[in-house]
Image (cartoon, rainbow, N blue to C red; front, top):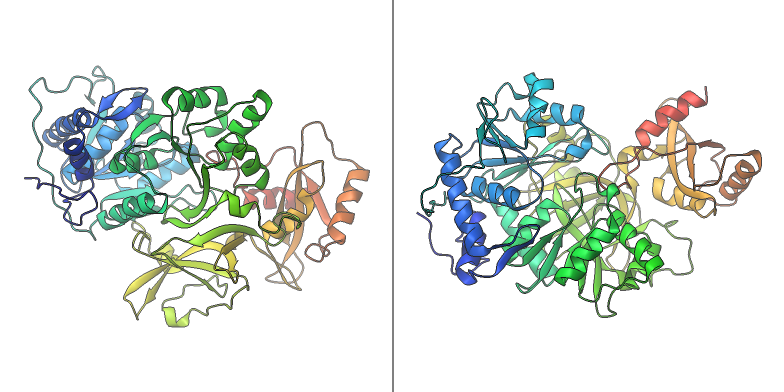
Length: 549
């Protein structure tokens, strides 16, 4: 049976679902969710107990790998906490990566169960081999589909307290897939210890109190909000396709419920601030904004800052599915860094390492590094590969030894694992981390190595350019690439001889880009669907190579 939780951050918790149980005991009548459904912590905890009992008798037990494809909302959070309470393993994947990529990724899991909305279950019809291992299909919201159990008519018995299954901190708690924006999606193994430490560090780093009203725009952080004991408003938006966000609806969520904190990708902040600037919108209740997923440009920070109280803080954080968060820095400091320099020509400052997170820069390598003693650390200010180690950093991928060999380094001194982020950057003399691009997207020429962020910043200065992308196409010399700049113009502008000449002159005038002679225009860059910021440069490189033949 479950044991009493005396401290919400105690290591005595049997598993993550006990955060909810603790909060239900601490303030039973406080709303856990305010919108679109209102439910108290006591009611939510009872509902999780009921769902746990239902799932258990339907065959979902401890260790059952369960694919979850349910939109963020009360049912989503109830199901995830129920699976955790049982000791089953939720498998979380971003549908925004595309159906084919998603099906391929899920096939690697060999799931035992599948819980999803009706539309999600149609995936099984098109990709039956992906779900050949599934023995238990449950549909949310419906009861009439033949052969699929439903959740809308749960047991009519009075709620019972379901015993929380005890799990070890180093066991498997959940599987979260990477987005696949720069490669094949990989299943990241989350342990109970990782999740506990993420809950602890996000609360302490961002000073989150239980009196907060949180605007949830990303499901995983919504789970953390419930563990923190805050009240959550589920943003009125499609979280799979945030580029479709209607800022009017999200602003209404914030102001109607007096949200005190929110998480928002740069895309979300940009959409809200763009609308707010035109319409004179203010968000007086917000006192904490956390942004992650992609670098936040200065103009977005400046614009959003004008909508909030001067005492409110905007945090910009860096991390990945494998390690979140890694760094943090306030917008107030970012806006003061090198104000007279061209933005991003020296890279993007992504903040100070979070307390408890060890961040190092090592020599760039494309091969496995088996031992930390073989990793060559770079001096301060020099560019290299970003590696991290900490209590909330994953130590391995699910059934993917190739990825483990390329991404993990064993440290014999501490018996811990360093994770190679796949990003390049440098540390400055103040201890801040600067990002210069993805390792896989650097362009190695016959003379030197070019990094995406600094080179692209040169061309982004032109008033006609919406964004640029450095790519490499095949060159005459082996193991080298020919650098090409791809240009996406702002609406209303069109490629022409004069514009090409201006961009060429801009590139030649800067030491970073003086050897780039090829410029190719594209109407619209392929980007990740979630943040609309991560450019699929590999795809652009193939297109550019074909155009230049």
